[in-house]
Amino acid sequence: MRNLEILLYGVYSDLQTEISRKLLGFLWWIIEPVLYMGTFYLVFGLAMNNRTPDYVPFLLTGMVAWKWFDGSVRLASSAISNNMGLIQQIDIPKILLILMPILSNTFKFFIILAILLIFLRIRGHHESWQLAYLLPVMLTQLVLIVALSVFLGSLVPFISDLKQVIDNFFMLLMFMSGIFFTVKDTQGFVAAAFDYNPVFRIISAYRDVLLYAGVPEWSNLIYPLAFSAPILLVGFVVLNKFERHYPKLTT
Image (cartoon, rainbow, N blue to C red; front, side):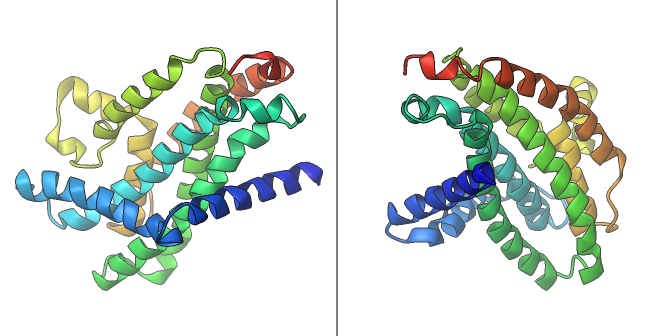
C-alpha cells in the first residue's frame, strides 16, 4: 500500500507542479497538443495537398495516440536519471519513478482523447457502443509504453548518450508509424517497416475503432503484446539487478 500511495502522490505532485509553472495551467494540456497537431496538419494536409479522404480525423487520431506513446516513453526513460538526487537520499523502488510520468501523461491523454471523441462524434465517425473496443487498444498501448519505458529507463542511467539516441530514433519512428499517410502510400522496404512497427499496428487499431468498422484487427493488438513481452521481461531483470546500484551513480 505504501508504494501505491507513493506512486499516486508522485503523479499528483507532478501534475500539480506542471500546472503551477504555467500561466494558463492545465489548459496547456489541451493547447500544446492542439498546436502540435495543427502544425503537422498545415504541413502534411495543406502544404503537401494530401488527398486522403477525411484526412483531418485520420491525422488527429494518429497524432493523439502517438503523443501518448512518445511523451510517456521519453519522460519515463529519463525518470531515474532525472531523480538521481532523490534516490541518493531516499530508498524508493525505481519502478515507481518510471511509472509516475507514464501515469501523468496518461491522465493528460484521456483529456485529449475526450476532445477527439467529441470531434469525431460531430463528424459522425462512431456510435457509442463502438467505444468499448477502445479499452483493449489502450491497454495494449499501455503495455508497450511500460515495456519500453522500463527497458530504456533501466539503461539510460548507465549510458547517458542513450537519451540522445532515443530522441533521434523517436523522430524517425514518428514518420514510420503511419500517422501522416497510409501503408498503401508506401512500398517495398518502407511498407515492411510499417508492418513490423508495433506503434503503427496500434494506431491502425485506433483508426479501426474510431474511423472505420468499429472492430480492431486483433492481429494489430496481438503483435504489439508479443513484441512487448520480452522487452518488459528484460527491463524488469535489469532494473531489479541494478536496483541498489543506481544511487551510487554520479549525476
